[in-house]
Length: 343
Ligand SMILES: [Zn+2]
Image (tube, rainbow, N blue to C red; front, side, top):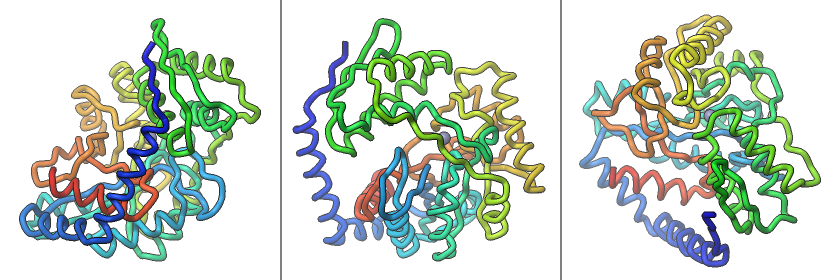
């Protein structure tokens, strides 16, 4: 059994890291790194990935960013970079020799809260964004397996879990504060996303039976076509994130082709325009999936590689920065400026 312990130690380390990030931001270190990157290593495209948004004040869910914190992100991005869509940013880094750093805001999955809490901010600052839709869930209220895991892990009465991940393997986690519980959920979900759907349901079902919590996992409201059309009319771009959000690397060729082409066609039919944007579910890809995405007629795809895109970027392996979990503007400033400096 793989045992992961030391909540107190982790808390101290992460506290020190957070203070350092604030210091770097406030003392101008981040600005200096951006200046150096702009002078010597441009053009560049930073793709910022988010999933969910939530009200500024209230209970937080899994993978969401409160509206006021998202607004701080947008303000920082607008003050320091040229915010463009992923499509335009890509065109610019390939075709222009500017000293510009471009930033693209992406939302994966297609949650209704994107419309309720992120879209008003995007409109207020007149900045574009691309939302990737999981088309089988449009207008529905599914309970995703990753939310079921979070529902168990985030229950405050639980201080420790031991999760059976199959193949007679199990992992134990101490559960501390809210951010550590989110990190533990990320760890578990990172393991589960490499398993097939039947195994995932089996593992999550066992976890729920072993640790019954008083409240069931909540369904997630997903965007409907009315909201999608309304946002499209004001400049938000939509792309495909497949039909059912499964790890494509675990599927057969014909299943992958179906996931890709039918989601593409569904969006094209409703929006009456060609869809070229794609984002791999969980950011996971391999050469076969990449080839099938090209064959399905997409023009570019966002993968789970964590870095900055430059002129040599592969348009079907676009790298990104996970921005949705960065709960302060200083955390985002550090992440982006350090990535630009070292990548
Ligand atoms: Zn996704």
